[in-house]
Figure 1 (cartoon, one colour):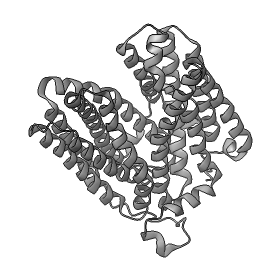
Figure 2 (tube, helix red, strand yellow; figure 1 turned 90 degrees about the horizontal axis):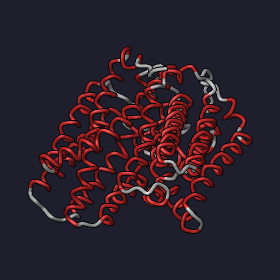
Figure 3 (cartoon, one colour; figure 1 turned 180 degrees about the vertical axis):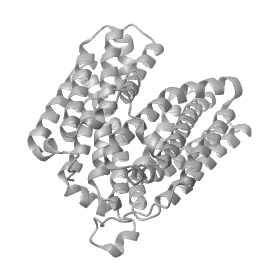
Figure 4 (spheres, one colour; figure 1 turned 120 degrees about the horizontal axis):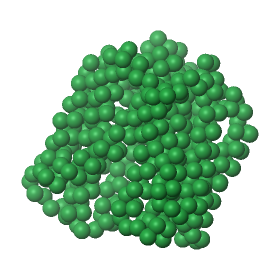
Length: 414
């Protein structure tokens, strides 16, 4: 039942890449916390802190698809190195702004936006390397380990960021991030060249166009592949219809009589569940009907959210939020595995770009929908109704996409 660590034990390149990414992800989360604290220190306004998220969200969505196309037309190792160096230099720029005692938010916003651009290009390139480093039967374990690293970063990074800022100042957190990026750079440096499509038949019939980034080629490919397309549609059903996080500040007081600490517990519960799901992920590698597993996991997410909306006991509510986070991890592992195994190598970057846009943009649409329904009716209606709508949507997807239900990892068909 425990996480399968054989990809780390048996594949040195993957081990170095995973270790470097884990360290750098903790550093990135520290920086995100430090930027938020610094903006609030300068302005005293939560609105300006919220603009930090906007400054990163827009470039991530705008450049996510293009970053995937670039990853399918260039050496991914070199692309990863260049963008990681860019991220390192931008963290150093944040440290320089802090050391210079510049009391203005505009430089911070600009640097955060540039970081998002680098990340939008780095992430598809890095994710599309994984199938080249591992056999296909090791991909579920590798994706579970990636989820574990993400969970560690999301929980440890902000906590460490707050501690480091409190003791040594903003510049210390940024400099720790600079040091953390060297681990990712070292891992990338040790990898072999990663030219897309080496040793594989290209999915794009226009071979001469392979060296020109084409977002539309990736979207056309995805539109003609029902199983891969359904991985994104099913995730949107969960993230848009049953996303309660924007309501946590309201229900913390209305339902539980709590304060900001209660909001923190509600926000941390899904991450804790996702981390536990990654720790106890050893069984995922023995599941071959991965499409069916995705539908069951997302329906479980919807059910857990709906029941959470019916509870008025804080600790019981936290349990159901953690269960939802665990179900989301299972869904993510199998969806990512299907993208990596069923798609040809010269399309993996573009699909990872779409994956990034969905993961970033879907929850924001869910925030808007939940907030609108809550204002029109009540938080309970928004949460319970959203969970039930997610279950209905997933059921309809299963009925309409029978090939997705029958998908077998031993014979992956896009």
